[in-house]
Image (cartoon, rainbow, N blue to C red; front, side):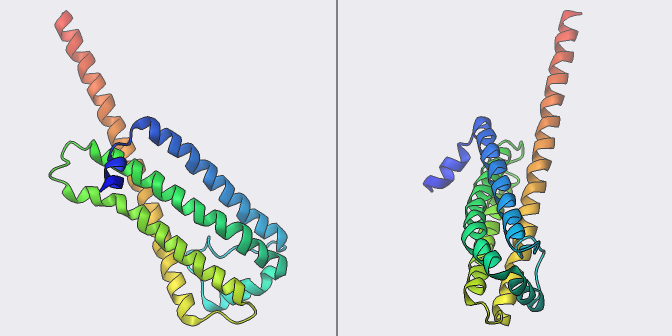
Length: 196
């Protein structure tokens, strides 16, 4: 309950600060992915695909080489786990900020539950990271088919929920900006009528 109240108390300046942290986290995660690719001779990481087959995972794990697997396990995955926390907090707080300002908030009681979407995305991201860490640490053993299947589900759910959160944030931002512009325009028209 205490966390929910804190999320509801988010102000616009907090969103700005969270946006900066979010962008820095994204840059660090992308840099770590680039580093793994450089160390491994150009092999791309598995996290950025919309699901992976067992054959593709096993091929990638082998192609990464020892240095690539080590960088993936010790550099990329820890940064990605931190980034999952960052994007979950940013999206949840931003969505709560906008939902709290909806004019029909009581009629749209379901809308308050959308703040859970990025948290579930982060949980899927963590599961994906744990699964990839296990596969990396068990190499050269082939990836377990059940683990591959659950990882693919988690990866797809992560992408869907993150992009849905992003679309909702952008949609709410556009909606609230349009409302603000409309309010400013109508108040300036009212001032002109009173002066005439």
